[in-house]
Image 1 (tube, helix red, strand yellow):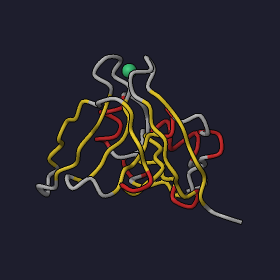
Image 2 (image 1 turned 60 degrees about the horizontal axis):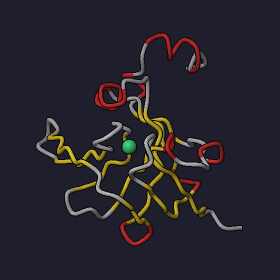
Image 3 (image 1 turned 90 degrees about the horizontal axis):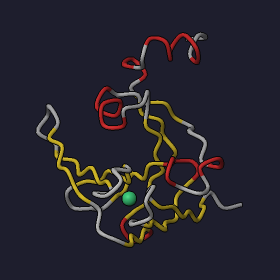
Image 4 (image 1 turned 120 degrees about the vertical axis):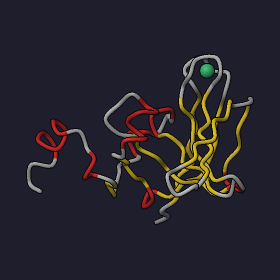
Length: 131
Ligand SMILES: [Zn+2]
């Protein structure tokens, strides 16, 4: 049984379409404060696709985020409706696609929760009460 799954998706207004092949074993939910800020939500869930397994129709707007370490990350979103699409390195080798825009999102179950130390306190209480 293959770990890989074909995914399709689009932004809210439909100007940008994404087709990719991702690994189900590489679905992550990130609770870092940058993800909270960019998304306006408690976390961002992503599926990873290498550059040769993603195709993007339309032209996303790109914002280059410079981390505390000086590390640059491209944050791509639709310039029309603002839907967040993916983050990628400046060489565009790997794309972290936001699972919320994908049609298969219910099959893309996070198997890793990262930066949970910065999870919103109410989120920790509701979902990580066992920690
Ligand atoms: Zn859009």
